[in-house]
Length: 170
Image 1: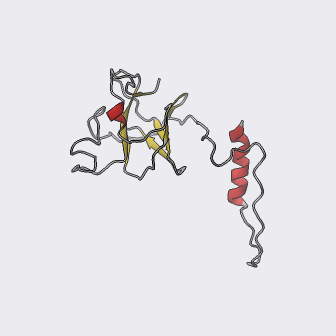
Image 2: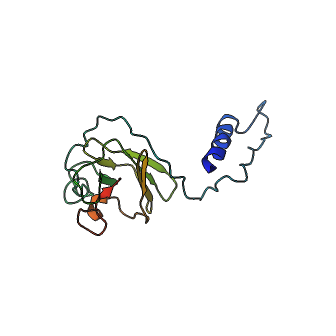
Image 3: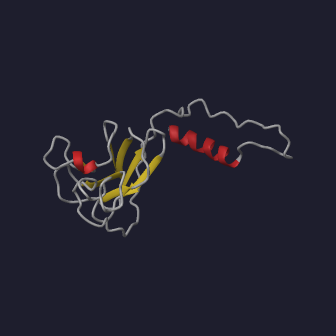
């Protein structure tokens, strides 16, 4: 319900904005948001993302810690990643989820949508400020991570058979 009232307001803001008319210094302020609109620091609305068409293969090594050793970490030979992991169908399964979306909202409010590759891998090298919130989705499924994330190597913590299990969406 909140998203329905927020969308028209956002559209009006984008299309209307400030009216500077004949370029005089008088600025007419934007209209106020509706009373039931979310404040800027509110939790983001958790939206299910539809399957995203991709032919990206995810390169290699699903399930491994991409940022460890001399791979995609600070001391690695490959391009450095800031967030990386693999999405599975169950916490201890072997089947991956391709074409899903991992949504990250970092401490600055920046939103990153990472699409899982055909082998379930997702990754970015964009700067992501911790702590951040994470959710996985592929309609009609959506799974938010319960606690904020401090470190981007998802497969370092999410291992089959561990108390956290793998990153999964079911």
